[in-house]
Amino acid sequence: MQVRVRYAPSPTGYQHVGGVRTALFNYLFARAHNARFILRIEDTDQERFQEDALEDIYRTFDWLGFHWDEGPDIDGPYAPYLQSQRSEIYRKYAEQLVASGNAYYCYCSAERLEQLRKGGPEGTKSSGYDRRCRTLSPEEQAEFAGRGLTRVTRFKVPLEGSTSFYDELLGNIETANRDINPDPVLLKSDGLPTYHLANVIDDHLMEISHILRAQEWLPSCSLHTLIYQALEWTPPKFCHLPMVLGEDGQKLSKRHGATRIMEFREQGYLPEALINYIALLGWSFDDSREFFTLKELESVFSVEKLNKAPGVFDYKKLAWFDGNYIRKLSPEKLISLVLPYLQRDGLVEADPSPEQMGLLSGLVPLVQERLTTLSEVSGLVGFLFKEIEEYNIEDLIPKRLAKEQTLEVLKNIEQILKKFFDHSDEENEKIFRDLAKDMGIKLGDVLMPLRVALTGSRISPPLFESIRLLGQVRTLKRIERVIKLF
Ligand code: GLU
Ligand code: ZN
Image (tube, rainbow, N blue to C red):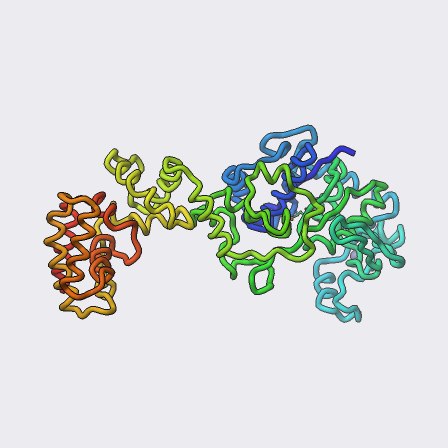
């Protein structure tokens, strides 16, 4: 059997961690089998369609850097890959199912269905549709059709027996047919298919061999199995992926933090780190190895190593991964990657001057060790590119010093800084040490007010390098400004 897999998102929202994990596993599975990975857009739900969702799919995967071999944007032998362009196909099979006695038309009004949902006067519990139209006589059918009533096509779920399918991860799953949603709609009144019908038909027609998808689709799989049987098709192999949870054990959602992939980009994560981390949500290679490039994943990924237990999304762990990936970058690469963030934050011009580039190449390598995301660079090096807006006087005064004492420190520092550029780093260090000793205070309590005066923050890149990059004039100006605050 030829392996073919697909990612089949509905453009009803943005790409988030769960969806991308599904896409990634399908992609890796395809690569491991030298097979094709298909993107199919399941856009038959007009009501939930979101205008920019499709664009978000393309942008997300462009940024992540892995792609499908067939899809709406590149075409392929099974086109079209947008379900909205395949309505005729679904209609044909829906009619075939009616003709073979596996589906029927339902003429119930929206009001009646609404009442059923609420548990209406007819005594039905709110367990769904009551199957009234399943037994309409040909005469009744003809009458309703003659009156021009709108209709939907419903699937005839068998009333007895059970349905089972094999899940590659979870094993055999058997469901009593009476527990399956009574007679789901296949074709809506607007003639468009529901997810169930379109999904089954396309997976068959596109010759998908394995379905790797989120576990939330597991309950639909019995129904899909019945539809495959009714169409006399062999279903693909199924594999429902472990859930992705937040640290509180709830399904990962906005409450936990960013889940949209493009939001991680805005926060300054590297796609390589994100892919690496997402690959470990519900999959592991062994007990120890954690770092994988996409290429490496392509050769080591296998479904056998999926975990049954849910993957837990740990934001701190992701940040740790990202920091590791950032430290591996060459200085040139890092500078080019942080530039857009500095521009976004208004620190560097769209077309940076040679002087700005000079400052960046001096400073960025110094902060490389401290970054966990690219966007943090603005906070760390911003002091070089703009004046400090406002000082927090509390930050300037070390815990162990009084206000007057701090002022004295700053005045002494001002004198030292006038000659800073005449000395080497070792000499300067000695000078600051001597000052601390003379004043009977700790070296840290000398350097801290200096650091805050120059950078506006207690956390900064290495101090002496910062002074050199800032230059004598700006350094002294900042000290003077701070002294005036006292
Ligand atoms: N359109 C479905 C989704 O948005 C696809 C589920 C499946 O892969 O079958 O998740
Ligand atoms: Zn009905």
